[in-house]
Length: 174
Image (cartoon, rainbow, N blue to C red):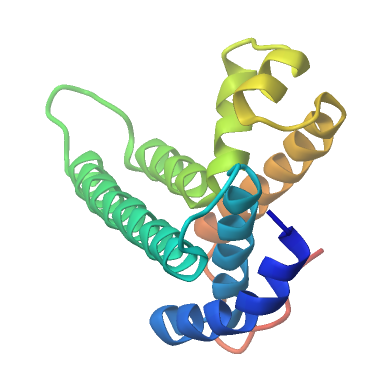
């Protein structure tokens, strides 16, 4: 299979289709890229155009399912947060600690899948080589991935703990 020809011939059309479907050009480019990566793994493709569009459509469908699961998970977390904030006759967490725990969970859930997995795997004691294998990335990239994930987690947690004051939009601390 001639990958360059395949890309030249179908990339523009595929990205246009995906942009119309998703409403986001960057996301469409990502899906198209993943589609072409999968095409490279094929020895031969009988009907290139239909195969590419089918794979791209399946990737969009799979992402929509992930988003729906995440939305459902966030709704459950919100319910847990409301429940944790309710007065507790059994002497459970203080409302402040419950809020902190809920913010931490929401911050973790807001991370991208790779960043969240990296942090959770590290917390479980996996070494860089094991994390690289699970995430299917180079071992040399694990440190950068963890550092970025920790930074994003801290930034999100801080933002959730102290909502923006009126008039402070766009003035986030670095």
